[in-house]
Image (tube, rainbow, N blue to C red; front, side, top):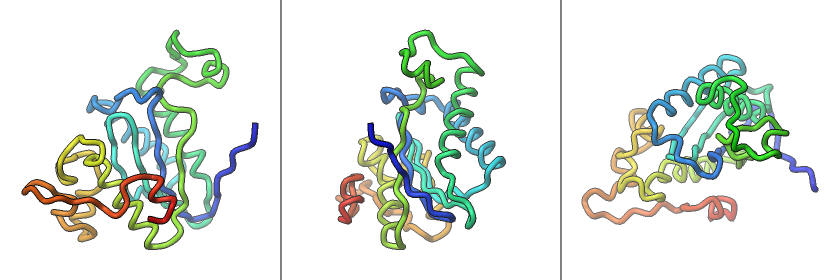
Length: 191
């Protein structure tokens, strides 16, 4: 089996997608969103970085993180956050009985998919595409009609900072809005 390699550039900004195991809708439960936030805060206290943007959907999360200038280890942070969340959700060393042997062998629970998607941001244009994709994702998945209606998104912080117009992605008045990038494939293809 080929070894998977990730880009590791000190101080980089990274777009991440983390998916729950078998796409279980763990984040429909508000307490689980609180647990996720607590896990992120604990992990950030251990190994600081900046969360530039985030959206929490029922079965997956998108983040945009920026690492400190001398640090490249986002993989550790992702793994640590997953562990802290899993412990908060299930309790320490409390693996469910229905976990397959492969997951038990790797000390994994049935909370997260094994891997995660990452993309190192290349430039300002790439950053804007990934931010727009991240913020439009609740609309794309049919969870809301307008970006501003999804409460678990950094979009609201972006509006307060003047980075987004409050009506960006809005279809409330019957407007049709489609961002330039609607899929991860579009992002990678440079659309």
